[in-house]
Image (cartoon, rainbow, N blue to C red; front, side, top):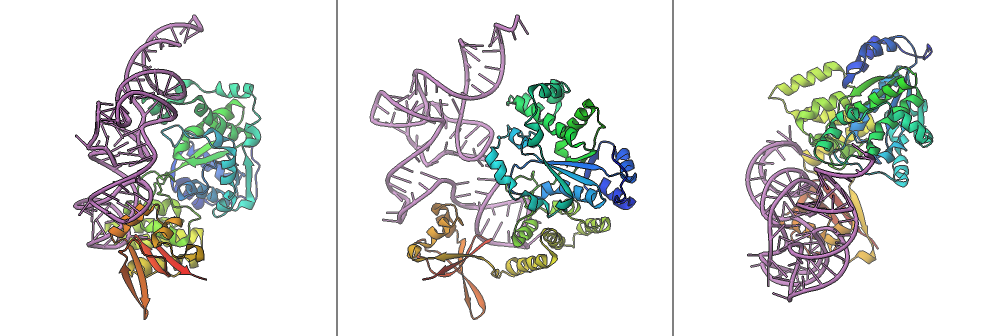
Length: 413
RNA sequence: GCGUCGGUGGUAGAGUGGUCAAUUACAACAGACUGUAAAUCUGUCGCCCUUCGGGCUACGUUGGUUCAAAUCCAACCCGGCGCACCA
């Protein structure tokens, strides 16, 4: 049992918020509330598999929940799933998930702490790597763990069931995943585990195994899932993610481009705005005379402010308004320097080489639809000259490709 | 192991000797309209070349038949299903 700790803050209002804001479900809400009010220092577990190099807003939701726990003085135990990432979780996949190699995992891990530090005070976080214990399990240990689950329990899990019924393969390895994650809870003696709602099955496995090892069963708090900006599941492969280390202007733009229906959800899950403000926003959206865009700008500013700072957020807002509402060219745009070697090449080749356009065929198509423009600044006035010749040689200038990309080409000798 | 069906572009899924760089849908991209929203309309959607023209690479892999193959044949690899084995 955890010991009474004088650093624990008991603030009923904050506790209530912790138990409700962005929460999908709590296995035993009353118990958790009691624990939080008791003044004991709880061990809050969260597992994060380094399956991609960047943390996006969706993944940040449970991390933000941890932040609330941390602010109340509880201990955050972050399990870096360097072992489990190799097993591959099936929670978010309808197909078999590829296994990551050690090298890929290390690569992904590189910058993780810096990213997490944007949300949590990492000096107070207990970081552990599950490879430390999972790789040491013997066959006998694993058999013991497997004894706690039946095949039909495993198959009752929705995505396994669907795959089974559709004749897709499910490897035994994937059955093992929840056991591994559950065993983590045993090792770190978690009092509470936080996760996305899609993790429910895995989180419950922790309770079963803790019970098996004679420990107190952890409580479980699942967070609501955040959709990507287009309303589909947030996933890097779909490309609808906002990463927490995105550049301010990019981040701002992504928020602006998202579906209106998601505004409230993003406000709830990605920001700290007060409940009242959420209600106001809801009312605001109900009135057809209001433009949801205004709310979105506010949201974008808040989110950029969280991951960068208010000043930068303000700048991003200005940039957005100048560039997209007033149609001006942004100040700091990508600059490509052309040396002697590349001089004389075609402009389109330069775009392709620098990966602004994926192929020359594509570039020509863009020219055909008048999607590449040259921006001329004369006497303070900006003119857009549409580029129509596909064979132009490189020269200095500012170009706009599509509606979002700006490039400045500089020749230097 | 035996039998059987199948493996096509980002996905789903047509095509079963030439008219196939491959119908269609979704996704994606661009243009118009907008609020860088949604919806709608239009166009594009393998790579490359100076062309409404041409070249190259692609339909699991490797060979073969043919003037010609995603399409036929063979072997191999992978998957589904049924049966057998495990009992």
